[in-house]
Image (cartoon, rainbow, N blue to C red; front, side, top):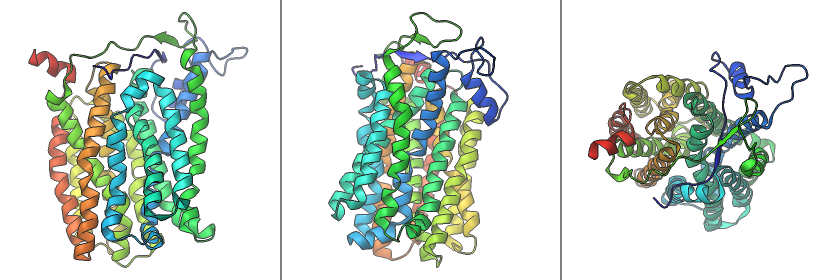
Length: 451
């Protein structure tokens, strides 16, 4: 295929798996068999520093993949009033993220082939920073949407390339590293939801300042990726125990036709439907709680609770899923939590608000599960590139109508009952698609079966 990356990628050789836990993870990722960071007189080789830089870069990048969206959700009512948006236009605004993710996600493999994954992620962080800085002060709805699209473009290419980078640099730790950056992603999501309203009040009460301040976090993420861009053509000429061993990119998987793969379509539908629920949650859940009589600050905290549930679970679920041959049982369990949450929101939104937020947060951990399955459903790095782009881009296309439809229903019904019922309905095909995607097979296996 013409969009198959051909770049030379360095693969970090890691020591045997360490016991679980963050400190052990850090040690195992930063040491090599013959060079310990704590040994007297031992100098760290470039492979060790590259690994550490890559871990820091992954975490900082993940922290920036959702604040552009959840910070807006916390201040959606103020933004609507400030820009004189109708409910339908606000629905369009909450549909912009999946549209941009689909559009620019398809371009990620081509960009990675031409410039290298590290350079593309670095450019993505710059785009996030610029978009977040410009959009509150762009003036008018059109300018706001355009600047948002710039930030979302950076998020889109980074979304697609995160599983690719993990698969190539940490092939024996796909579950662990997916869990690490998924946990950071959930932390950034929750932090933006929790602190945007109080931070806005502390900075003078202007929603423009409250949204623009998140550009600072994106600026921090640019720094480690600049180092990784410089390292792209560097590396020892021959492998040694204390250095990263450069290897060629996997051969193109030109025989794979993902449009004919049930696993690829199962992943795309599962990813798209979980994204539908996630972006409706991030864009509209605070408004649902405010309509139930809760304050803006409390509604933001409830969204933060939903998002923060992903911090521990986003680390646990990928590691658990990576040890299972079939991930279908996890899919079903998460879906049932979501159905319970929507039932509670429908019948008693204020009375059990904290419980519904927790259950919804558990259900939203379908996202790191989907990323883990992307890394497991192909045998090669080249296959993961194509599968990640296909599943995420097609999935985001599937998710576009959901937030828009919720906005229309909100405007014409004046209440959250129909939107909540719609969100619950989406979970049923999501569970079915997840069971298909979770089967113990790869896209290469399906290609051989067709042959």
